[in-house]
Image (cartoon, rainbow, N blue to C red; front, top):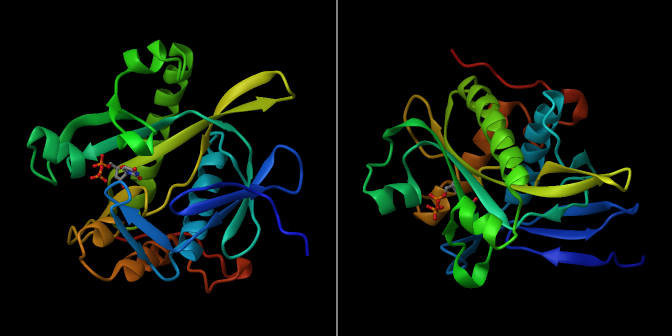
Length: 255
Ligand code: UDP
């Protein structure tokens, strides 16, 4: 069988050329990295679970009118996505202080923020993804003012929706990272759509009852039970990989 052409290899995913022009196949690996690649490991089964979790969340976002790159899941580790020109920004949305915000500003982890806060980081591994302002983004031409406005509006809508989705299954959405891309519709009309993934690799998710971490911080901080935590998120969303399409039950609402 002809080997598919690899377009890009990231830390947790690989992108291959898709079956039709304008599409890519996104493959989810079990590899995990943290602290700008200084810590590396494998979380067995992570790729399978993240493929499912990202599929589920992107489908739900599509339903409420958020444009995403997700087309359909192909198999256990792969999904078909629209090819976009990635805007070189990591857009972080925060609801509760944690991670780098707590370290930088000395705010205790778990402190509720007065309102949701958006941050931009320039995607550049060599520089360690430095935080940047809108001024940097427009001055260096990474995105236009209009594109930043679109990205911010989408990020806040996604946050509102995800807070509710996770709350319903007993999970607090502390913070998360998004990436967006430019997608050309009918060859001339460009719009900004959500790309990449939304998974426990890119979100901080705490159990509502116990504040137990159910995300990549378990790997970053050597807390153990990483795969189990990801599985529990999938189980509560009603999408454990064992369940076939016909067993799809949707989220289990917690009281
Ligand atoms: N995040 C991510 N990729 C990155 C950096 C951050 O997915 O390269 C996510 C991270 O999982 C968390 C949020 O963005 O949910 C905010 O991360 P933070 O700035 O606190 O950085 P960290 O503490 O992860 O270094």
